[in-house]
Length: 247
Image (cartoon, rainbow, N blue to C red; front, side, top):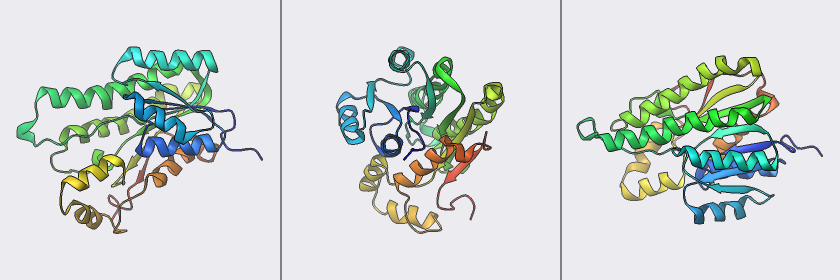
């Protein structure tokens, strides 16, 4: 039986845990040649074992151009093309307006913005006509959540990238969309909840469904955006937030 992503070459940055890892597992299970990145080698190696199906890990930081070059050189050698890019790598840090300093701003801009720009830009020479790019946004890009102004600004910019890059790449038939999760139970979210008493209940109350989302609920949307099922969707932001912004 043919699978949706048989023989497709898929790149996922930040693929060693959370949404990235769950998405990688689903792509691999549907026949894709999956390449993931992560900054730390040990979690990367464990993720490759968890994904199976011949997945490949390339250690690197999306904020470092040479690391991205190594990733794409490997894919050039192995397959000579890319069909799907999920620019998922990103970091979140809180800081009140009065506490924002250059280090905080530069760290978030380097990973979330520069890393996203060059993840996509450096993939373009290998991308097939009709390929797809999915960017990792967040409800924070559209909602004024306290102490997250720099992080939120980066995610608002990513939403804008999907729109402008759709125009830039339309002649090649490459679709660009954003998936924007809400309160999802990722490892980083679990750590945050452990460190902040009462936070889980507060987040549940923000969500009409009264619960946190699961990583697989986001992964399914990423695969939809990468598939032919979404062939007439471009420049859009799909919210996976349990209705936080809509209700």
